[in-house]
Length: 84
Image (cartoon, rainbow, N blue to C red; front, side):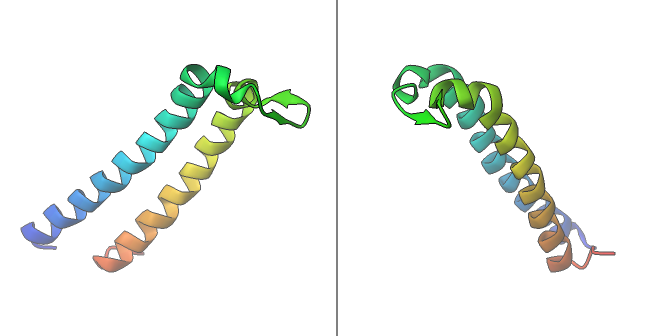
């Protein structure tokens, strides 16, 4: 892999990381702390939605983001011929 390809690969990887970490931050900090009062007016399974995001939702989203990252990186590896 030449230097330009390495730079492009790393740039795309950082873009994916920034997007996924932003989603994680929004869900865990934004929904679980900042927007909790607004979300608590909605109920999910008998629980207030703000409480649910703070206790369960952020964990579920984090696990989903891990699988999304794996899928994105597999596609990126294939694009740059780094797949196994």
